[in-house]
Amino acid sequence: MMRRQQDPEERQAGKRDRPGARDRLMTTQEVAAYLHCSVSTVRRSVLSRKIPHYRLGKIVRFRRSDIDNWLTMHRTGEPSPELARSALLNPDQLSLFPAPPVGEA
Image (cartoon, rainbow, N blue to C red; front, top):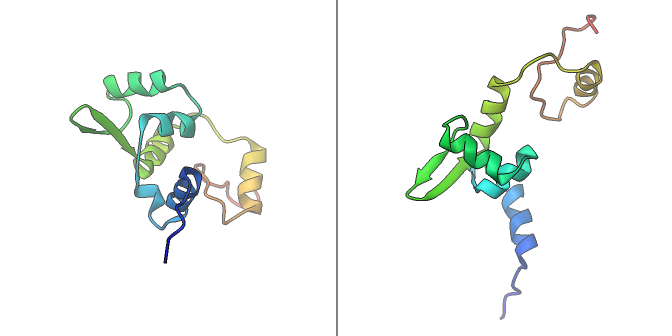
C-alpha cells in the first residue's frame, strides 16, 4: 500500500495543530512573521541579546512560549477599551493583556 505524500503546506499545518505547538522551535523567519517585523530586526535583537533565543552553533532558534512571555514582559501602556472588551466577549481567545475588573470598563 502506497502512502500519499503531504505537500509542505499540509506538513506545516499539521505542526501548528499539534499539542505543544507553543514549545516548538521557530526559525528567524518564522519569528519575524509572527512579530510582523523584518528578519533583520529579529537578527539585531538576537545580536544585542534583547530577545530570548537558542544558539546551536551558527543556527539560531526561538521557542514560541519564550517569545510570548517576552512580549508580555515588554508591554507598555494599557490595552485599548475595544481590545479589553473583545477579550471579555471571547474568553477562549488567548490575550496578552489582563482583562479589566468587572464594572470598571
